[in-house]
Length: 180
Image 1 (cartoon, rainbow, N blue to C red):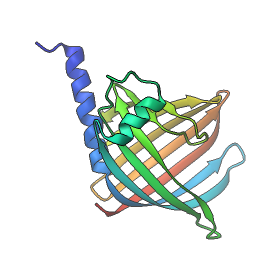
Image 2: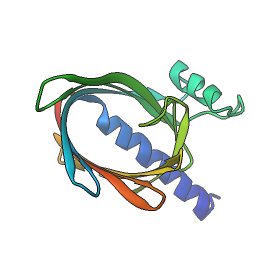
Image 3: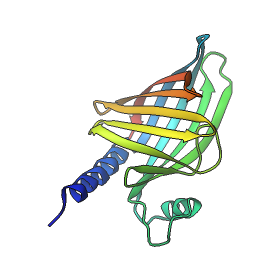
């Protein structure tokens, strides 16, 4: 017989896999960053490609090794996200790159963070099927994020970055599915 805790874990695993599958495809992202407390803004557009990763794939095995997980621990699923970004105002290239996410329990393992190239982890939960909430902490900063599907073609993201208990930046994103 399956315990209530085991059932909750299975539901969580199913929910994150479904969220990642729904995210697969190509997206156009428009975002605005607000620097606090002065309110300075920066507008960025990105082309984003998201690929679903099955348990046991090479990318997730490498990610597990990066985090020092035992060889018998298998990340249940993940995604590879690649992007190219430009400044919306002046058209200059902002950044490009890729990152891996792998899920196990209520932890997302990443090969890099927003402000570091080192492997990091984030706690996650899904309050409903359309919404993923993340909390990441490293280098004295806290990153709280919410990704939410709006129908099949859109999703919103909001990020709040804090240092020493003070909010220092807010990022708001509108992402439109262009393929997938």
